[in-house]
Length: 260
Ligand code: MG
Image 1 (spheres, rainbow, N blue to C red):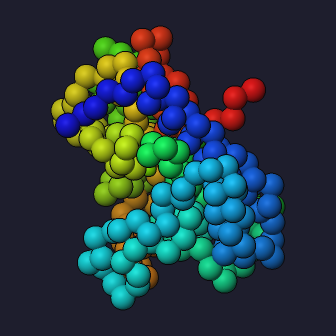
Image 2: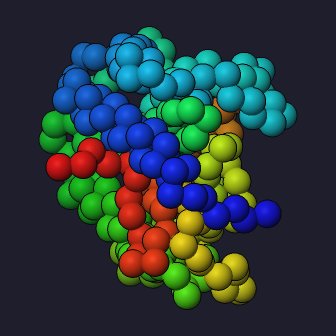
Image 3: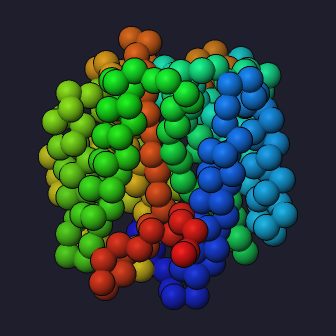
């Protein structure tokens, strides 16, 4: 069931989204060679709690069907490096020069969720890594631009897919965008590719997480033995960007942002 949020509910999601954006900005400023992913995660959790929010990823229950790792996600952020696409578990790993680091953050304010992600390049990076990161962000923004009343979910998918294909990048298909509100994942699913159906009509009050994941290869992925980390099957680089948005009568409003 697709829910439409009230103005008061969207205001809570705006607060959650702002905290997510603050954490991403904080981690960007702390991201340098030599730092561990666990340190970055600790900074994120501290900021989320100091802001009066709850880290939604911590203890999140996955399917638990893949490997020997924890069933509940053990951290407040997902930090995925190079060929890791999403759901990397922070820990003792050290960030190195040239790494492509994708950070995904979720926060809950008064029961309402925000969810956002960005990919960062640490120091010198190859031209193709830069193109991958830039195109994935551009695809997210194109998907957001298509998220307006009267359009359909499939129009978001088409906008994202077109940019991925124009660059020849792989589009990760098993993981998709989603509705969001009192749960991190709600209806509808928002695929990053055309499905053959235009999907549900977009209406004011709908809130969506739009999150393309592109790779330098064919886009096939698998789940690592840690039960969470999703990596490219061909070991190529992957990038991931995500915003939570609200659809208003005037068009999309990005909620995972720091108001100026
Ligand atoms: Mg998400």
